[in-house]
Length: 195
Image 1: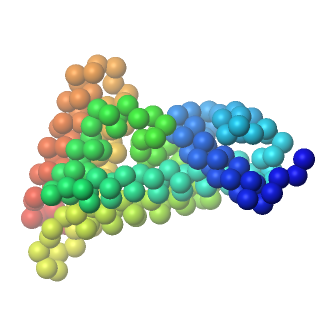
Image 2 (image 1 turned 180 degrees about the horizontal axis):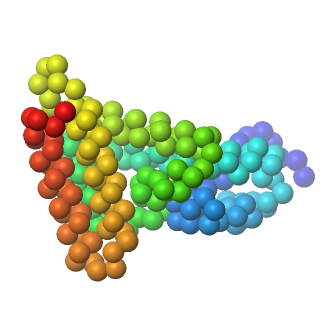
């Protein structure tokens, strides 16, 4: 049975959205095409009409996940009198720590992405650059001071803290990691000598 172009595009978008979540939950190799397609309410038979390969889907899903993560940072920042603090509070929170399928793709897939093809890694590079750009804009630096190194340190610290907090089974220690990271992010952001 043939589907219209509009329906085919809607199906493709549904698969990308579902894959974006399921890859974050299970990893790139932790879920097969059959289950990805089933999650979108479709059969595996339509996969190759929509995507060239699983890497193609992984790249599209990673791009979607990174764009979503960047949007969430921007939304947190734009609705606050202290935008950097709002991003830190959102990202280094218990709620975000528990978001497996909608949380940060760098936390969920970072080490997995490093072992993937360039096609799959490219959206992570773009997403990291977008996150760094947001952090650059949120840090009020004196004229002529480039905040890039601070942004890199802050992003690395935040991603690492959420990763470690998810590994820990001790809930109190997990929360302490997030709080310690938030304190250190604030210190780095205020420090005039981290460049």
